[in-house]
Image 1: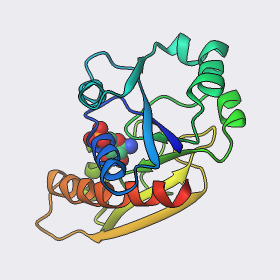
Image 2: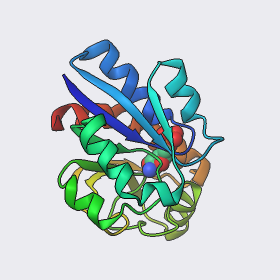
Image 3: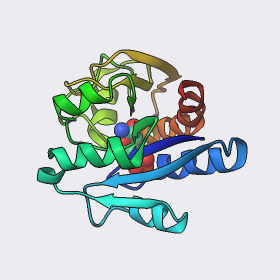
Image 4: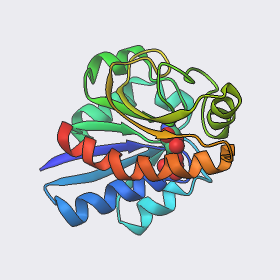
Length: 187
Ligand code: GRF
């Protein structure tokens, strides 16, 4: 049995897809924990619906030894999956879980990444750049935003008529399709 922890603080549509994928296709892999920093995040409802333990954390808790200890000794996670989690992961955390934390970014890194580049800000910047393609990047997490080693990218074209909103929809579909599969290949 492999255990995945998802860190998410938004809608949780990726979390939902990942949970569904393993329930249906590979029950040897389970999402056993959801970590969230936003009490209003929909992802907490996703966790509840599926009976998955969730931890709502403050920034102080997130940076504490206790939290690290809980993850290491109690949660026993094989992989930490970031899906819409916007806090930088502390250095010690990265060191303890080296090679075991991944993230998905809604553009083709190294372009359109870094602090503040999330959600519609990314798709607006992509559209304004005039680029003819965009995509998704799944990468290992290091101590800087969006800079860890790239594991996988998938591309899609941007048409003249595309808007940041229509790009966002295409990207979301690609994320839902690829993230669970790549996670499966890693664990
Ligand atoms: C995704 O677009 C992902 O690329 C980014 O955060 C978003 C999370 O969306 N890291 P959701 O909460 O899974 O719907």
